Amino acid sequence: MNPMDLRTAIDPTELESLDVDTVIVAGIDMQGRLFGKRMSPGMFREVGSNGFHICTCVYGWDLAQTLDGLQVDYTGPHTGWHDFRLVPDLPTLRRAAWLDRTAICLADSVDDDGSGLVPIAPRTILRRQEAAVRDAGYLPLTATELEFYLYRGTPDQLRASHFSELTPTTQFHADYNIAEGNAMEPFFQRLRRALEASGIPVEVSQVEYGLGQWEINLRYADAMEMADRHVLFKQAVKDMAAQSGLTATFMPRPMTDDLGSSCHVHASLQSEDGDRPFSDPTRPHGMSAKLTQAIGGLLDHTAELMIWYAPTINAMRRIRTTDFAGNGLTWGLDNRTTSCRVITGSPDTTRVEFRLPGADVNPYLVLSGVLASILDGMRSGADPGPARIGDAYATTGTSPTPLPITLEAAASRFRDSPFANETFGANVVQHYAAVADFEWQQFLGAVTDWERLRYLESI
Image 1 (cartoon, helix red, strand yellow):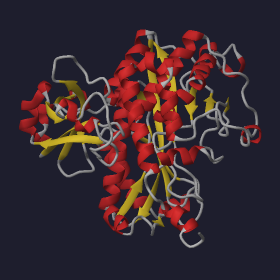
Image 2 (cartoon, helix red, strand yellow; image 1 turned 90 degrees about the horizontal axis):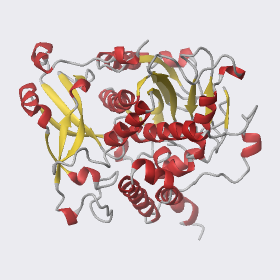
Image 3 (tube, rainbow, N blue to C red; image 1 turned 90 degrees about the vertical axis):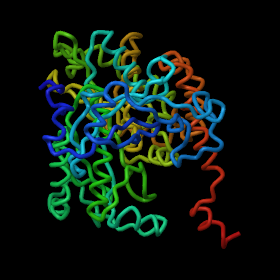
Image 4 (cartoon, rainbow, N blue to C red; image 1 turned 135 degrees about the vertical axis):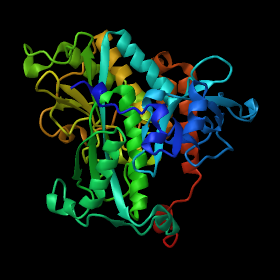
């Protein structure tokens, strides 16, 4: 199946006939969230390919929209918080079927000075990496596989208790269990229907291992379409959960004593003539030399790109565990105790599954990192070493990790990486390293519940 066949675009002239009252035009911020404006169908057509102005503050603040402290070259008081244009990408126009009479169109960020796409914008970064793969003669096929937790109570209700009283939607470990899934099936039926009607095709949904943890798998697509589906999927899950009196979170590790939530990234390539270069039936396990090199490149550059694979303080807590959250620079055949699980079979299904990223990743950035690393590995003939057999944690679980395990260390590796600077540009590297450094400093300045429980009475 051609993944492009699964796109569901709306003709802008047909919005009223489809009973659409509101069009959301949305860009993507550094954390992978939607920002933008709402308008009528008529105004959307008037905006057209020119777009409209948005303040660059959306690329100059942190997760909490803090305006003081974070300093980046692209925007800030030194630029007067200047504008850029948010330009609709018309092929992404689709129903937002989880909202009433609403359509949504994703958009590119374009500098207002005529210099082109905003270089630090996530969609720009992925556009350039996808173009590099296409220039090498391949179509990148990807899927992001997200897990999330679902708690009872709306976000406003849980926020009032500082998220300290959480009731999960499953009360015991029920991974894959049908019976426990049946209780929540009315919600997931509505969610799957809304996703399908929004051009976000679903493969399967299931109960996951954690208490209140769930997973929905989306169909694969080319890299940009997959990233677009990813951000819309997250928004739909959160919105529909709140509409149902629930709260969904993609926090990588919401509980100390339970499993983390991942974003497993599946990646393969298709050549211009339709062949699959990762498959070679004449070689062991059907793995081509290109696939081995791709794995080598992916692992070679993992440490340098950790601020895109684990972009928050909480994400680092997930990867410090042995609960299937990636495992250093390891790979294996159908082995979930490694960071890079290789799945072989038919040429169409042979692929890499990168298990290290958490559910908080920005999909445009994580796919950019994965594709750039794979392409570099194929060009350089990278060697990933021997595959791990059996429990890879048995030999690596007590060893010092080759990966940075704090956001500060990850930012330093990213900033000093020749590969990252050459591949993504020094302006991109400095911008995202500054954001990660700021997040780390915010964390160091905060007193946590853990500290009060541990020290307040005992010291």
